[in-house]
Image (cartoon, rainbow over all chains, first blue to last red; front, side):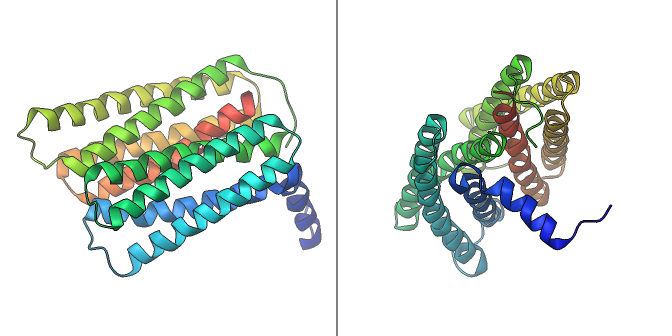
Length: 139
Length: 130
């Protein structure tokens, strides 16, 4: 059975627009986090210098992470579920903590503890964001 | 998508434990990556690597347990999530073991990338079973 493009669009739209568009924003946030991670972990593993494509991709994706997590909190705060509001606030704190840790590291405090702070914020953020994605799709 | 909204307690517990173990393994592994120099010659470096190995082995066992419980739950969404978790954790473990025997950093990168593929469905299992 084949579906028309319009039917697929309607189906995706009805899933992604639940709970004030939390699933759509969480999916975008997850993609952006993955780009940040692929670029950042490439720099850490291969000990790349902080210039060129990897660091640019990392910084732009990190900026997109912070913007999207604020959108995510805004959407979740408009929804009617308390769990979404609380968990998206935790998500925002994790991502913004990771972003500030990365800014300190790039700004000259080049100690491993700040890179580990980036990693901690990232891993808590990605766990919480995927929780929000699946939870808001299901309810 | 919303076929079943009931709580599944075994899967909820197993996926929570698995997510925490994966987070711990990631933090220990990142600390190892940032601080250790191979081959190891300091005790604290060995302690970091050992904590990473212990948490990684525990998360491998947890992934198998989670997969078995999602299979027994008779729910398709949970089953696919558990399957994705156990496959990605297996790939990460294979990457880690290959890295430790060859010191080729491509395998370290493979371990990092399959870790992040593993934690998404593991956290999804919590959301779908809570």
